[in-house]
Length: 194
Image (cartoon, rainbow, N blue to C red):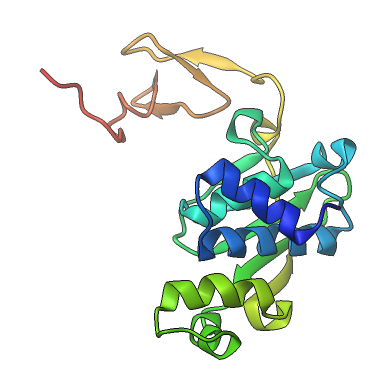
């Protein structure tokens, strides 16, 4: 496995800057990989990983950078829980580890560095130094991944009976006997403008 510093540099380059969230994401991903006995820098190991990130903040990019998991490969999943946590799943063994950033680490950060009281600067420095047990919590979990969420080609496609667009892998909704996409079923994140 590459060094922590190498992973941190790669994550910062991918994300565009180095911040406390990047450090957390790198630490979370590395810890999850250690828990699963996976070296994320080995190509064959990366193919075994599926990662669920529970935030859409800086740490998510760092987790993706370390693990090599990507949305487009269907190996990175975003579940918007608003939590600084990630679950790494070894698809070969079924083992999974959920790694959570400890809430109390923010307050402890000031004790790890000389700081002018600027919390974000203290966290950036401290999160690189803090022992795992003061920064992270690890839970062994089980994740049931449906076949339609696994990497690979879509298992099936249907056509929305209202708009005519294709819908892949069970994302359709049946309303009053009609197969619809989620937009036509009324659960869209956007509206058509005039």
